[in-house]
Length: 199
Ligand code: IMP
Image (cartoon, rainbow, N blue to C red; front, top):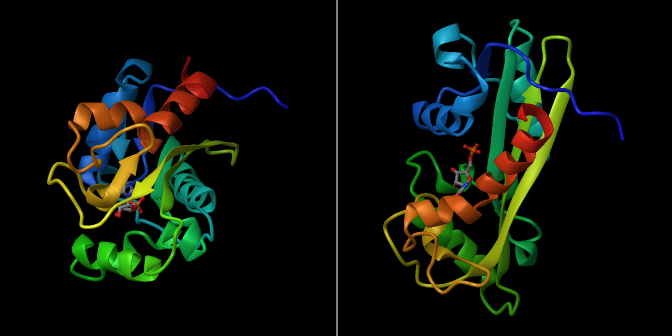
């Protein structure tokens, strides 16, 4: 295995137009960069997510931003349900439709699971750090669990109300957000990336 490349710049670009994501990622990586910028401030468009995997989508977004001259970080995440052949997977956001209604998306998952014994699922978070010369360091974090019905809890977002992480009884929607953040797919991915590129 080749030695991973370390982040050595002052500014890290967070390749998204989502202000919530910028804040969350900047908070996690605060000790390792002097400043953070996003695609919004840099006037960079968000490329179409044409990849067929979480990793491919994270990489294409990071690379597009890095080509503008900065080291850039992008993520892609979603819920994988093996009994649904991996759906909704990279289409997790799209399953909520134009109104971004995750009750619709969760109902679609539940309908697909009708009569199926396997209710296992996992969240995935791919993170890719890209350099202007095209080099990339990419990691994938996971969090395994079981899907329950009806959905429970108002604390999370997306598919959280139907996901119970392994070893727990509460859904991510019922759990204290700080506790979710310790065990989530995002936490797993950031731990790996910090270890690889920021320490
Ligand atoms: P992204 O912003 O393109 O990565 O889309 C991720 C989608 O996956 C979100 O819209 C959610 O539906 C789903 N997702 C990702 N992470 C989580 C999570 O921690 N809880 C619930 N849903 C999630």
